[in-house]
Length: 117
Ligand SMILES: [Zn+2]
Image (cartoon, rainbow, N blue to C red):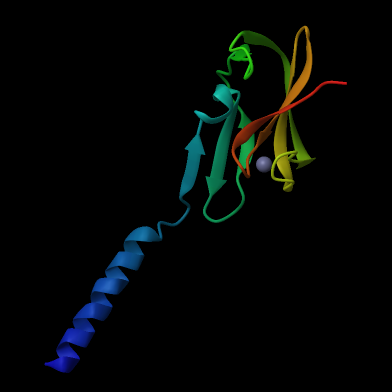
């Protein structure tokens, strides 16, 4: 009896693990960064960003809520996030009539605002 229950526990555990390890699972989110970038992650690799084909042309100012017109977005392969200091890919956003920059970080998944010069 003892042996039988041991075997049952093991097979239940194997089934559980099999269900979680789906190969080539890619996570993809567009709700981060106000939809400016698509955040993707395949398996256990670090997250990365891609341009969003349907990106908005303005995002709300975090201080006032006013819409700021996006001048350009640029994806950099080697960027350091000002918030979590992770080196990795990230996206820079510049705005019209505003000297601030925003940095989209795939590690902390935050849009970090950087004061302009
Ligand atoms: Zn970060």
